[in-house]
Amino acid sequence: MDSKLTVRLDSAVIEKAKEYARIHNISVSRMIESYLNSVTQQKSKDIEITPLVESLIGVIIVDTDHEFKKDYSDYLSEKYK
Image 1: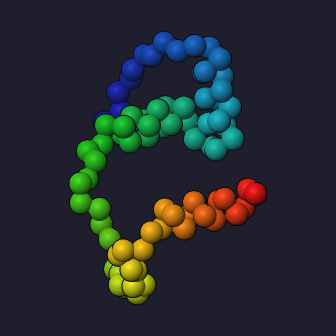
Image 2: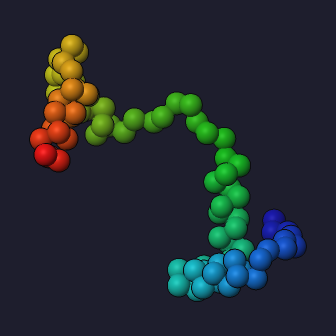
């Protein structure tokens, strides 16, 4: 059920929002609704892993005692000599 809500905003913000909505072929109301849905949505602690990503787990064996930060630091030092 759609309900009406009055919001006071800076006129420049309103103009930018209208322009964005026109370019993207949506209403300002739908933009605000979408934004409010996204910020009020419960964040899931369990991230769903897709079958493709799951099939890639373990494909690359990484040496656990390798110093990746040192390698990256060395790379940057060489790059910006």
